[in-house]
Length: 506
Ligand SMILES: Cc1cc2nc3c(=O)[nH]c(=O)nc-3n(C[C@H](O)[C@H](O)[C@H](O)COP(=O)(O)OP(=O)(O)OC[C@H]3O[C@@H](n4cnc5c(N)ncnc54)[C@H](O)[C@@H]3O)c2cc1C
Image (cartoon, rainbow, N blue to C red; front, side, top):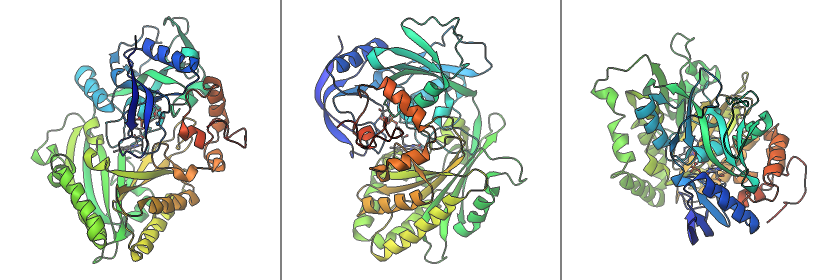
């Protein structure tokens, strides 16, 4: 018997998306997931899986049945029906947090995740389903790690989904009640599925042996970094040939009052050969930012920023400069996943952001145009007493084969514009930034604030050349709209490519 809690309030971390949910379920097994999907279907009700609720948009907001996968979080044995491959593979339940995943991979397997976002509280399924990314021009976002998906879908059917010639040997496949589907359209649709195809129970992921990274954070002026972004030399070591694994840029949208240029911090991750011999300085990140970015002192930082926001907003540009400079750090060396984790989770979940991906294939650099237009807008708004309350981030990601990934088929630069919650007029300001980024060809992250998409199906059609294939899968696995929600209704997902004029359901 599955326990069903009634009328329980669910909210995402920043409490923008929230609702009292009639039926709240925490399944303990795949069979529970099958049962609850069948039950919702028989009652003609909607059902949605949620992860850690770390999406700022309402992409995860359920309506009738909520399935919280926090107990579906174990490491599994690799199945015996896999083909011989030289890949390092692991098999895990989809509700595991990235934090737990990284610990298990390190302690039990000696393996490390190739790349991840700046925090690790998300679940694997939640992060993969919205295309969560980190930074690294030649590194994939999270969907790029997936080799096999076990999805429970319409009718409680269990599908093992892989690309053609996937890792399972069809002649050996012997999973009870599971149909093996090795089909490119299905696989590349199911990677970034926005929870619309059913409930992912588990993944088989490709991993790397444990590796080490060295991170350095250095301050510059925007005018000195911009040419290096334009000619891409920022992504190479001093020899001009060796690519740097990960580069991230954080920039103050406001000019420094004394020096007259926007301050930038550039974060670089270089691979270390073998385990480093670390001195004291290499072992920790900059102590000031660590102390004030994490509990117990982080609440003070947030209170301080909010006080400034309300009482002396004109001090914000200088505060942003100070906060960027406080991140400076000559060297932090550690296991890969520990360096990829940027932390400051406490502060970050008290902020929200929009994030847009820009094509950087060939010599395209529209993202630089967009960022400079946003600097200009920040200055204009400053004159009206309206301020941005956090530095902007720029990260770089390799192309993805996932149909609904913003980096489908092209390398991209992501621009991320966060605001501390409670910043006056931040919704309007964020919309202005979304408009600027859209005009320059940016594509919004599904899990961040993407209100620009509302009522604009033509944008989604333009962004995703394989949308029609994704929507075909949507209309097959979600034909009764069981796995839809307000978000997918509002964007008319499933029907944009066939030009249906009216949203199907509400
Ligand atoms: C502080 C903070 C930092 C962040 N940093 C980054 C970053 O560095 N890079 C980046 O790209 N993003 C980042 N994000 C965004 C975040 O990674 C994504 O929004 C991610 O989807 C959140 O994962 P979650 O587990 O909380 O999933 P949720 O938000 O709960 O759900 C996301 C989607 O996944 C679906 N889903 C969840 N579980 C399943 C399942 N088992 N089966 C099917 N569908 C499922 C839900 O239905 C929903 O559509 C950040 C967010 C926060 C709050």
